[in-house]
Structure formats: C-alpha cells, structure tokens
Image (cartoon, rainbow over all chains, first blue to last red; front, side, top):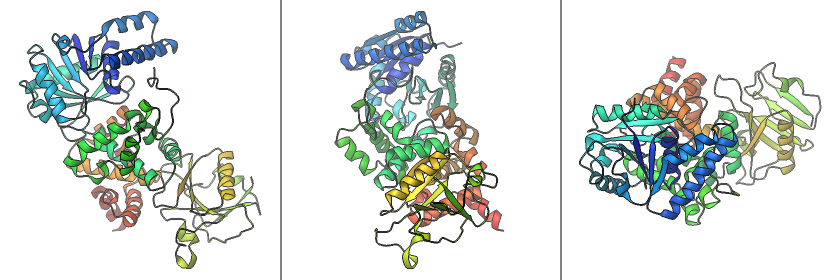
Length: 292
Length: 213
C-alpha cells in the first residue's frame, strides 16, 4: 500500500510533466500540476482533457472515470501549492542548476517527510539531491516518453537516498500500474545510455546521406519491429530536447555518439523542433497529444 | 514484374523454400543475383539486383576494382533482406543505390519487391546500410554495459521492451543472432568508419575467437 496520497508535478506543462501528471491522476492520486506559465498549463490541461476524451472514445475509460480523473488534477503557478504533497516529481528543464534550485525552493515549502523525485534523463540523482537538505529523501523516477502510455519507470537511488525512500517510491510506481526497474545512478541510466546515442546516430545517417528520414524509420520499424522510428521519436521528444540530452550526456561520458550532431543544431536554429513546432524530420498537420 | 534468379548457393535473403524463389522465371526483365553469384552487366535489363552481405555494391560494380569519383551508377542495384544473424529474415528489403543509379531500375526494384509483399527502404551504398549502421553500435554499448555492471542483461532487455516498446532487448537480440555474426558486421563497419562505437565489443571478440580456434 502506497504511503503517498498527494502528488505534485513540476514542469507539468511540458510533454513529460503532463504525461506524469496523467499517470498520477489516472491511478487515483490527487495531483497538482505546477509550471511557470498559466497559458502553458492551460494548453496542457486542454491536451490532457483531449487525451482522456480519446480514451473514452476508444472504450478504455468511462465518462464517469474521466471526469473523476480530471477532478483530481489541478493546475497552479504557485509553488507553495505543493506544500502538502507527499511526493513531488520534477520534470523541469534538463539542467543541473535548475533542478538543484527547484529542490532547494521545495525544501522550504514542503513537509519534512515529502519525497522529491527527479525525472532526469541524464543527470546524476546524487548531484541533483545535493541542492537540498533532504538528500536521503531524493530519488530518481525516470518515466519513459510518452509517460501516459509507456509502463516502465527507472528507479534510481542516489548515494544518500535512504532505503525507506527508495522503497516508498518503488511501491508508489507499482500503485500507478507502472513497472519499476532499479538502475544505478549513472549517466542516462539504462534507457537513455542506449537511446540518446542511437538517436544521434540516426540523425548522422540523414546527415551522411545514407537515406531519407522516412526510409530510415521504415527500415527500423519493419526490420526490427520497433513501434516508432528514431526520427519520429526525436520529433516527439523535441529536437531542442535532444540537443540538451546530448549536452548533458557528452561532457560526462565523452562518448562521441552522445554529442549533438551538427544537423540537429541547424534544424533547431531553423525553428524545426519536431511535433511541438509542427515540423522536425517530418511535417505534422496538428499538435494533438500522442495516444489516448 | 518478372524476374530471373541466378544463385550461387544458399541465400541469406531468400533461404531454400522461400516463396520468392519459386515465383522466378527465365529470361525476365529483372535479374537477381544471390549468394555471390558472378555478376554479368546487361544494359538491356530493366534492373539487375545484387544480394549484398557486409560489402558495398561498389565491390561488384566498381570499374577497375574501384569506383568512379561519385559518378558511379547504372541499372545495377544492391539489396539485402534484413535478418539478425541466424534469425529468420525480416520483411524488409534494404535497396542500395549509387549516386547515378537509374531511376527506372530503382522504381522497378521497388515495385518488384513490394508486389512480392516486402517493405522497401532505399539507401545509399554505405557499409551497414541503414539497420546495421544504427543498431550495431547500440549492441556494442549494451555488451559493454553488461561487462561494466551497469545492469543485468535481463534488466537491460526489460527496459528496452517496456520503456521503448521494442519487441526484444539488445542483449537477447544480439545473442540470438549470434555474437560471431555481430563481430563480422561490426568489424566491417569499424574498418570503414574507424569510430570507436563500431569496434566489436569484448564479448563479440571472444565469440569470434572461440569460433576460429
């Protein structure tokens, strides 16, 4: 049985944060979605409602359940509203100082038993925790994109994470219907240590003229049975996010495959950010949330 | 679209008994060379398709043993039906073109394979084509992580299946296809590209060495 009753999500207007909020609220937890911009939160709330509408239309959820889930999900731009949460999951900008600063702020707002979880893709949980006074109650909870659809969560203890905190976080992930996997606190854990360089390699293949993006994705989907090609996935993640992943990853690992390819930087400079801008390696007619 | 098959033995793309073999006919407009059968250029054919292994198409078509300064290309194309080592062949045909390949030949090859029920991805004549170029470095990394103790093989595979929706994980896949095969493919990539990601992982080197003892 989970000790967690109320969950806060920081960065909830972003793709990942919005998905995490859906996971928490859908599993029956009172959920507070926090972000800096009210407009962005409103847009995310609209997309979330659309996601659940699709779930109803597809027979995965009743209208009553949809309304109950949406009733458990509130939005705020005031960090103080997270004060009574039992678990706060941050999914903010992938930057160590930003995450450390947020946890330091939350330290002064939340109760002393509140657990802080980081959804970081590439940063060290131990280093993120060093920004606050409760390093024993900080843990890594890395959701997979799109969080509202993918089941796996990498649960990572930092050097100072207590066994109780790790256990509580683990039980909570199970209570949400997700599947936890324990990983060491190493760059990219398992998933991104494999995925980020792989995605960069796909971009480099485009850059090297190996094939057109559509042919690369077709080959990977047909030949390997992946549900999504790497370039379609990068469009979903966001090309700017892929750069940030590489920039977080490469200085630590010094793996040349992790470094952001030149083509990626040119495309971001041109405003091609992927699905969220309407164009990345592919063109998109709409910006509706994936799945449902 | 009719096709003639010239074979030199067992084909990795179309093993004995494959339905594609039985649909071939004599003296057709497209000629398909399988399993290293000696190539005979023929400008009168709509397309000539050469089954490739780890080598580039240029090995078969290059003038005087080499290529032609970026001007190479004719009605001769390369192809490979992707398979993971000893796994059964997939439904994907990687169709290999050169800079000046005939568009008529490319179109004909696509129609031929798609009519036979395959998916076709067009790529340039580079080592590893699309899939091996992309997945072999990932398998090398996973094998290295296993050696370094990042996670167990089971957890790495579970993470990729559950976290990314893959049908199988990197360790189970590369082992199933054969670590010796992985060595051969990634060694060819490493020789061409020279970057560390393609260097065969220790477990693949061990498998190869055991095979050749």
